[in-house]
Each structure stands twice: as C-alpha cells, then as structure tokens.
Image (cartoon, rainbow, N blue to C red; front, side, top):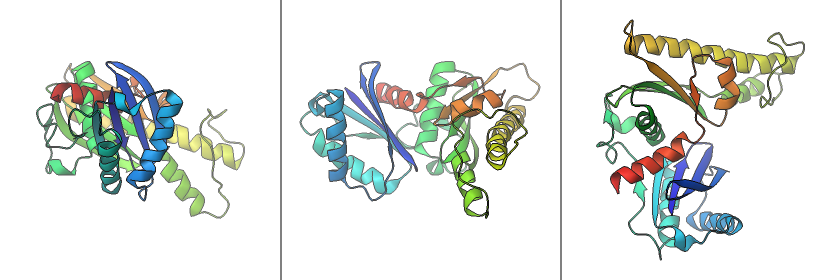
Length: 264
C-alpha cells in the first residue's frame, strides 16, 4: 500500500491507497510540537481501527508546508514502516517534481508543495488551462497552463481565519458556524448577518478574482479554462461562486498518488 501525507498549517490529511483505490483517509489537527513517537501512537491506533497492518505499507509520499512537522513525520515513517518500506519516503518540493510541471515563477523554492501537488493533479486530469482554488487556512489560487506550466497565483486569508479575526477584534461579534446555508442574503440578526457575509461575500470574491485571472490567462481567445476547488470548505462556498466548475475534495491526496506513480 501507499501512504500519502498532506501536512497543512491547520490540518494534516493522510490516506492509504491499495493500488488505485483509496481505502482509508484521516484528517487530524496539525500540532507543530508533535513528536515522531506521538505520531506513531496515533497512527498505530488509526491503522488498528481500519484493520490495516503497518507492514502492508510499502511506500510513502509526503507534501508539507510545516517544516517542524515534516521532520517528525519522516522519522515516524522510517521507523513505523521500517520492515516494509521499499524506498525512503518521497518528499514533494520544487526539485522533486520538476519533470512533471514547469514552475514558471520568480523563485520556485517559494511555492508550497501542496500547491504543486494540486496543480499536477488537476492538469493530469484535465490537460487544459486551469485555476485551482484551495480553501485552507489561507485560500490559494494556482494557475496552470494547458502545456503544464505553473504560472503562479494568489494567496488570501481563509474564511475561518477571517471570522476568527472578526470575533477577536470586535466587542459584540461572536464565533459562528457556517457549515449550513444561510436562509437569506439579508441577515435578520448578528449571527445570520455574519453567516451571509461569509458565504456570499467569499463566493462573490472567489468568482470576481477567477474572472480577472481568466482574463489574464486566456484573454479574448476561445481557449477553455476550468476552475477547480478543493479544501475543507470548498463544498460550502461553491454554490455561491458560479465560476467554480468542479469541487474535488480528494485532489491533493490523488495528486500525491499521481506523483508517486510518475516518479517510482
């Protein structure tokens, strides 16, 4: 089996692939102080619940934007899967995937590994001009051309981050839950007004930015461009953002699998 690891600022998402089938998936909080031993205990439990033996894991591929955790994860994988690993864990960065995507930005080392994974995964699936939007701690827009060049993108505060700041910096505005749809765009109370502002506001912003990026990428040409959304809150915002064509919650995990298959 292949163990895939996506280490983000807020959450770490992992999955197990048996050939092309995703047989298990976990989403846990990213704790920068977590040690390799603590990770081993946690995943020993999760593997047991899933009925999976660690000896069945033959390879590991990882993308990380948290250097402190990357070290712990690598140590955990080398030790926990020591009896079965066929090769050292594969770590995604601008150098290790340069044969899969051309990174056409000022400083390739600056681009997050998860953004490269998403770009590769989306291009492998659609092979056309693309905007990939990842709704994480930050919302990232990543632009990939039809000839598989990573052109750069945009980074802005995520919805949870913005709502946390709003509640923390105002005297009467509370923390709110936006997991359900607002009843109307005009809020009749404070919570509904914040809820509506978050989903309608971010939805309109996402579409507006996507329109501007599309104009810059393809202009008035007849070239098609697809907008793909991923990340924990993508499915909530997509109905309020008509520029989004596809929501793919497994884009990053599948991208890690694609990268492994292409480089093994």
